[in-house]
Length: 316
Image 1: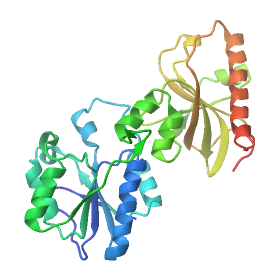
Image 2: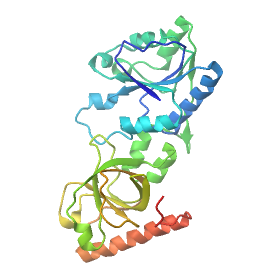
Image 3: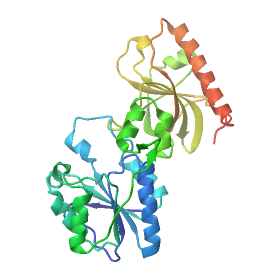
Image 4: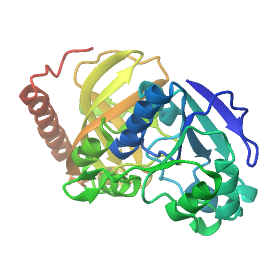
C-alpha cells in the first residue's frame, strides 16, 4: 500500500482514473469497511486502483489543539488496518489553515477536476470551511462536470448508525464489547513499556506499566480482560487503567497483569487488545482487600477465556 503526502490544492498525477473515497476513517470501523468493500467491487469493474483521501492531523485535533484523548486509531494504526483491507493507496492531505478555510465549492471542484472512475461518499459526508459542504454540494458539481458519485448508505447496528462518534462514546463508557462489534476487531492500545513503582510485585502480582500517546482515546477507568502482543507473542491477562485510589494517587496509569508470563520484558513496544470491561476503578481499605479483589478479577479472566474455548495460559 502506497502512502502519498499531499498539500491542497495539489493532487498526485493520475495515469488511470481511480476509485476515490475521501474521509477521516478514524477507527476504520464497519461503516468504513463497507465503503471500502464497495470501492473494491468498483475497482474490479474498472480495473483500476482504490485510493483513500484522508487528512492529517484529524480536523478535530486541528481545531481543538489542546484536546487529548480523542483518536480511536492514530495515523500508524490506521495505516496498519487499511493495509489489511486491501487499499492500494492513501493520499494523506495536510489539514492546515488554508485547507480549513477553503470554501466547500472550491474543494469539491478541485476534487472533481481529477480524472476519477468513481467518487464514493457516505450520506453524512461534510467538508470545506465550517463543514458547510455536503453530498448535495458534491452531486451538483459532479453533475456539471459529468462525473459519477456513489452515495453509500449507512451501516447500522441495532438500528443505530455505526460512526466514530458512537464508538468513542462506547469506549469511554466501558462498553468495549459493543465497540468491538462496531469496529469489526478488538479495540487496541499501542504502547511503550515504562518503569513502574513495583507495587504489583510486592503484592504478589507483578505488572507491566505502559504509556500510550496523548491523543489516543483512553477507555473508561477500571479493569479489563485483554490480550497483549509483545514481540510477536500474545499473552492473555488483565489491564488496569486508573489513578490507584487505594494509594491516594491522582495520575492515571496503564498496568498489565499477564496470566502466563515470568521474567522481565526487554521489548519496549507492546499492543493491548481489549476484550471486556469487568469492573470500575475502586478504592480499597487496605492492600489485603485489594489483593482479594485482584484474585477475583483473575478468576473472572480465566473463566472468560475458558468459556470461549481458549486456554488462558497459552501463548500464541
